Length: 131
Length: 93
Image: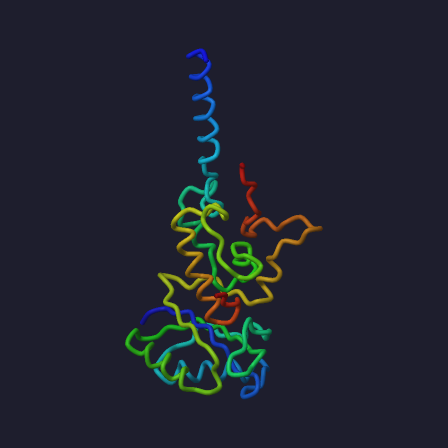
């Protein structure tokens, strides 16, 4: 069993963008092939960067799961055939899962101009180029 | 021209060139003991973070522009491409 991080983009017109249904759709796809879900949550409902199958908005679900490496291809294939899913991304994690962060967490991490930046925010201020 | 003067000029030019070609340390690895710590912070789901390394259009900045080291640029490139595939970031031609 390997550890995987999967992100799934669901079609808003086919799956109701509420929490329970989205997570259920994803966990069903994974458990069907003998995977065990460690944590699955709705990540965000947002406007897509580009249209996919005439959809302008979509719901993201992030899942941390363990699965047999031979079954992952089957999960990917299943999700690609399923019309409820617009996109999917399954990435193998190393030894441990990365910290589970939803879009709201990322939003909270974002440094505000007025406030003092939070200590553990990634420092990515633009460097001054010496010219 | 006196030989002394031209030598001084050449030295000056060398200094300027050095200043131009000097790189600031990569911002991911800067001040950390191991680069891995810093590189682990590159996250393809963190759109805000990635947006600092692309143009408003969505093109990835060169290493010269972003100041990334070779490894962080490579990881960042992959992260941006993951984000594009998931429609978190736009594709640009």
